[in-house]
Image (cartoon, rainbow, N blue to C red; front, side):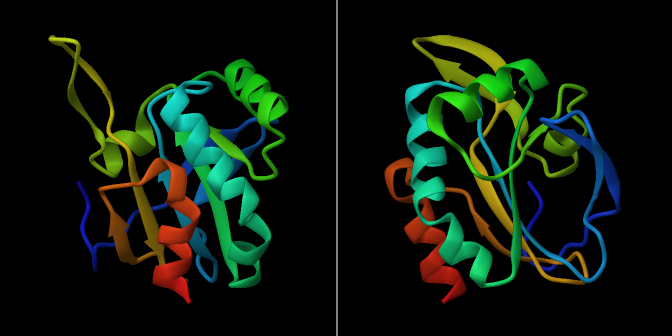
Length: 150
C-alpha cells in the first residue's frame, strides 16, 4: 500500500459516464476512497456517509472519487440506488487498485480470494499522498475525512 509522502504517476481511468480522466492532475487535490463492491452493506454505508457530507468536503477544495473494480453499469446502479453526487471510477483493469497497493488477498467466511482492501488516500496538488486511512469506519467515513481535513 502506498504511504504518506509517495507520489503517484498520472494514470488514465474511466468514470461512470464512460469518460476518461487522469489522476492525479497537477494543481488539483484528491480524495480517493477504494471500496470492495457496489451495493454491499459496508460499501453502501461508506458511500452514503460521504454523500451526506460531500458538499462540506468539496468546499475544502478536493476532487473526490470512489474507486472499485466494478463495471460502469454496476456503478450507475449504485449511484442511482443511493443518489451519490460524486463520480465513481470503474477500475476493471485494476490499474489504480494495484498502483495504490490495495489489491490483495482477502478472507471471507474461511475462503481466501483476491479483492480490493478498503482504504482512503488524500493527495495534495502536487500528487503526493498526505494521508492514508487504512482503517475506514464505514458508517463514519466522512467524519474521518473531515477530522483530517479541518
